[in-house]
Image 1: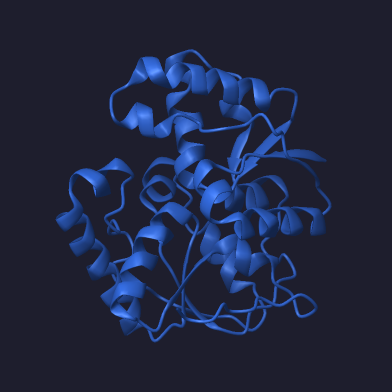
Image 2 (image 1 turned 135 degrees about the vertical axis):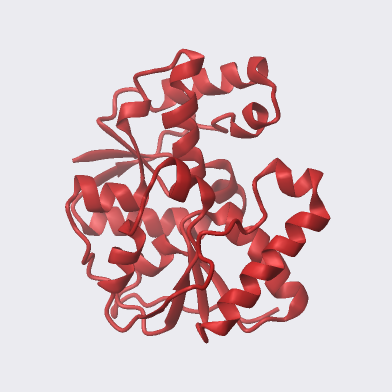
Length: 241
C-alpha cells in the first residue's frame, strides 16, 4: 500500500519528530510512505480568516503535490478537516475522498487498533475540535491508546471542551484563549497523568506553552509519537526546560 504523508505546516516547522514517528508507525504496519516535497500549507489559516482568494493557490498546489496517491494520511485532524470539508466547496473534489487523519486511517483503512506500541506512562487524551466535531473521530484515538502495552489511560474531565487554540482565534483573543487553555491544563492535572496526548500539534503547542510558563508536571505529546514507540525503540522524554 502506497501512502502519501501530508505533514502539515506546524509539524514541518515545529514538530518534525511527529512526522518521523508517523512514517515509522506506518512503515511498521506495512505501508510504503512517500513524502511529496512540493507540499506546503493547505490554506486553512487564510480560509478561516476569510481570505478565500488567497486560499485557492495553496489548495491547488496541495492537490497537485498529492496527486496520484490512493491514500493521503495526515497527523492532523485540523488539516484533514480543511481538505475534506472545505476543498470541495472551493472546487477541489478529488483529494477529499483520499485524505485520512492518522487515527482513522489506522482503524478504518488498515483495520488495526493494536499497532504493537509500548509506552509505560500515564496518559490522558485531549480530543481537538476539528477531530471531534468535524471529522467525528469518536473513540478511534482512545481505542488505539487502550491497546498500547504499558500505557495507563486516564479519562480527561471535560474532554470535549475546546482548549482555546482555534488557530487565529488564539491570536485575535489571547486572553480568552489562554484562560480556556488553563482550564484544560487544570483538568489534565486532576487525572494524575504524566503525558497530555492529542492528535493535533497545534492544540498541543498552545497547551504546551501554558504548561511551560506555569512549570506544570505534564508533557504534551502527539499520539503518533506514542503509537510509534516500542520496547526496542522507546520514547525518550526530553529534559525539562
